[in-house]
Amino acid sequence: MESNYRNTCLKFWRDIKKNDPKEITAVRTVSYNSDTRQFIVLFFNEEYVVDSDQEIIHRRRDGYVPEVLATIIILNYLANARPFLGSDLNWVSVKELPGGTIFYSAFHKTVISVLIESFGHQSSRLMKVSHVLGGQPGPFGDASVVLRAFPEIPLCVVIWEGDEEVKANATILYDSSIEQILDTGISIDLGVYLADELKKLAQGQFNKYIT
Image (cartoon, rainbow, N blue to C red; front, side):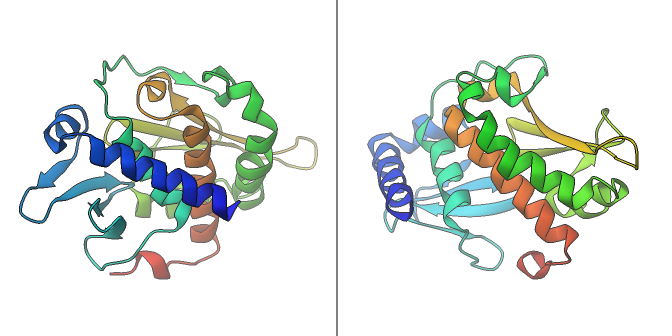
């Protein structure tokens, strides 16, 4: 698995280097410093510096280097730099993404189950912890929050609280336009990353986010 991630990162770095930075900034909500040859990318309410010469990403405010899953997501966002046509907001389930049904079993295990464990019986905690990632109240379930992974990519985390008679449930909804920006497999990784970050925050693991 580690080897697969490494190869994926290498491919995305190559793809980024092949593109003119002006072409990337024209179709992505990012900035580029021609002096340092670095992109600045907003990812879940934090600015990250992407240095394709050194092939490294770090958080702008403190130099924190993101884990491999976040790195792959950010790289795919830049590497897939093609015109974003946009659309009216249209929430869809993972099964409605191109090829999404193939990933559903893994999505349930690594996303839905994690969210149920963390918030299924205390849905009010979702809003309390998600503000760190820029979460805003959403319109679904017993509790939901809308977050922006990137400026063009909103996600909605939804919790249906359980009790003695009804099982808790959860999901992450995507805007259908995400297929214009990320590969479906990377969209699944994005859900996994978000569920894991929310779980850490629910457990009080705030160290990563402290200035």
